[in-house]
Figure 1 (tube, rainbow, N blue to C red):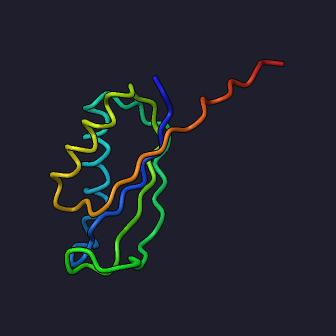
Figure 2: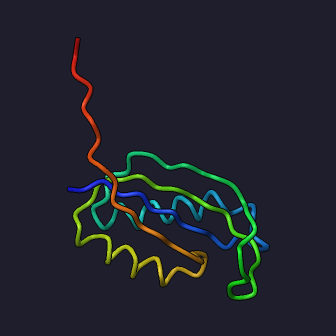
Length: 102
């Protein structure tokens, strides 16, 4: 199992009140592919550098999780089918350091 960070940009245009449901739906997709979520960071809504699919801003969410290396491609493909997911980026992180008991 490796640690990963996934930055997901969500399309919230016209549906700002359902952002919590969308974030939870993405969490369930990641967990269905074997991800053990460590942290979910809800960033904020920001302007996109360029317009994508007639959308000029997105809500960014950062997921930190552990998963098998082959699960990342499956997650990427499933999230590509989600209409609310505009962009997704995955990065492998260094292993978490264990704190030794004193």
